[in-house]
Image 1: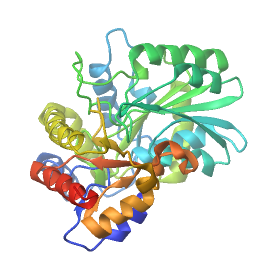
Image 2: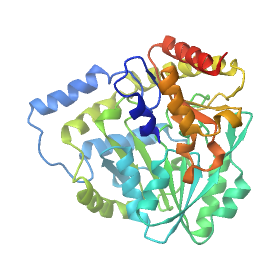
Image 3: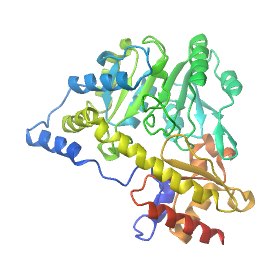
Image 4: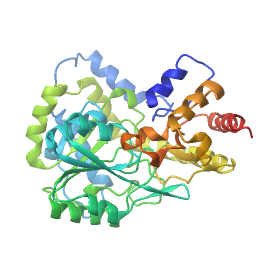
Amino acid sequence: MIRQVANAGMGRSDVLKFWFGESDEVTPQFIRDAAALSLQNGETFYGHNLGLPELREAIAGYNQAIRAQGASKIGADRIAVTSGGVSALMLAVQALVDAGDEVVVVTPVWPNLTAQPAIMGAVVRSVSLKPVGGAWQLDMAELLAAVTGKTRLLTLNAPNNPTGWTLSREEQETILAHCRKTGTWILADEVYERLYFEPTPNGAAPSFLDISEPDDRVVVVNSFSKSFLMTGWRLGWLVMRPDMTAQMGKLIEFNTSCAPVFIQRAGLVAIERTLDVTPGVVAHLKTCRDTLIPLLQAVPGVQVARAKGGMYAFFRLEDQARFGDSLATAKSLVLDAGLGLAPGNAFMLNASADAQGWLRWCFASQDLGRLEQGVQRLKRWLGL
């Protein structure tokens, strides 16, 4: 559905494009230089299925550095480098899910997370977050009732795309304890863990890696895309149980063979110089959020809460009779107002009614004026 909206506006220079989940800021020069140097040095051959050993070590060290005190040991033996976070998620699903298995996904969520187990032939069920004053909350009792001994996999994305909802440490502990009892695997999409705006000692949102043991049925996915401004590079990683790693290498062989070495060199420099990239990205995104949200909150008929993490404002147009079909609304905004947003029902399983009337606005913009201009276009389109 997001692509349908984008296709309607492609080629139009007058459209303000906030539909995709990426910053409009280019990757830092020193990261690009590392890739260029690798190519100049002739690193154009196959690499190890699991990634460059030095990059896996660096990712392990990075994870250890931002984990809560007392977190389980994360060594390179638990790391696989992948061709993007989306590939890491698909690999995890391929490794864990067979046709007919039951998978529970917390929604609203990025559409790939419900589509991937469906591709594998799984029975996908959803537990929806509930909007309260524009903020989304998890009904823990509903989730625990949905995850039973028949549930093969529970998929969670927090900080969440599109809502910005984030699991608390207490909620993670409750979920992990329950899944240990039911024998359910947890697939945690933590791509936005560094794009977190609440005060923390380690500059990251709560992670299942903070509380799980190495032998727990937990797989965590992360990516260079968001925190390092590297969306187009397609580089991510998996953290898994040590006994899964060798088998994951085989799956990577069957999917992509390996991530390109020159891209891994860029990722290695990005990890080594995290402090030169990520804090600035997070600070700017917080400014973007704090610019856009008050402007939207001031628009009559708009319901929106300030997200704790991510790069999105997920807001509702309250006149359901007029704006109930989010996809139609998003297309109209592009065609009639030159404003490109993602439709809320794209993020729900089977496009259920829970996210109708909602729209996602990616606020990762270098130019804050574009955000202000976008709100003005929304207001004119609403007749205000």
